[in-house]
Length: 337
Image (tube, rainbow, N blue to C red; front, side):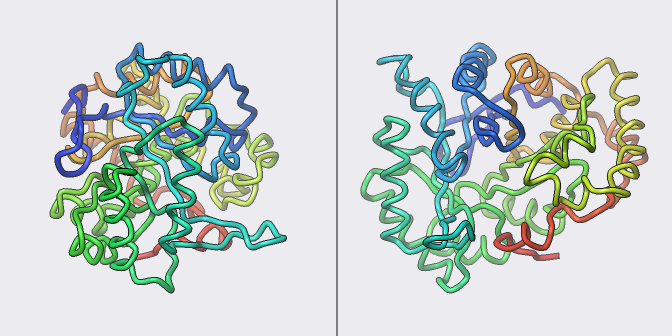
């Protein structure tokens, strides 16, 4: 199955490109990103017909949104409707510390949404996510707060990041949920244990972040020494030894298979994700336009049953060594399997 036709995000929303951009990369999360780099990626996205941009108020403490806003401002009147933009709120800092806390209170969410709108120069966000659930507030109550933001015209639709299928069903009883965002790739298959199916049942899009396994599923995985210099990866179990070297054995076999197909490993990894269901959208991140070309090429790869079966042999379910998050990184996402 090829994925070169637009997909509809949620119920009745505008069509979006099957491959979008995860704009966490517009900050220094995975390496240095300057203003001109983010601008170049966004310009190339327009050339490639990529129109879905995913960001958050906490990516670089607003820097990602500011860079998107600066690019839109350069486009002038033509900026209207160029991109389908998603942002998030719900993660905060405990006063006077760097400790993360979660805040899903209605007033806080609207306050943060207003700041996001200002940073991007927008009057309305296409898709507004709860970045992390605050467990003390029932998700039904949070969904009700988001409905009010729709009624005020500040957002078109809403979604949740890293929630369990059971939470999705509870929220959907209040109002249709446009999207759930979750890590999904050939190295992270947990969404297949209920989330993919629940999204299908409820008409909710599954937006897959890290579809290339945080560079593992590419032709240029980050060197282990480089990973140890990045705050997120240096404590991530899959990038620590001996797990890193064990994972690279599988990665090299996957790279060779992609090379035999005549495609980039990253392109094949994303094509596999998109082939799992028509309601799945991938949001890989990059800081370089040439890498975006490689990611977008996934749309033109025909994933057959034979290819899927052969990939299952090379990267069997559960092949990745190490958990996808450290104990600290697991605070917030809902485990359901």
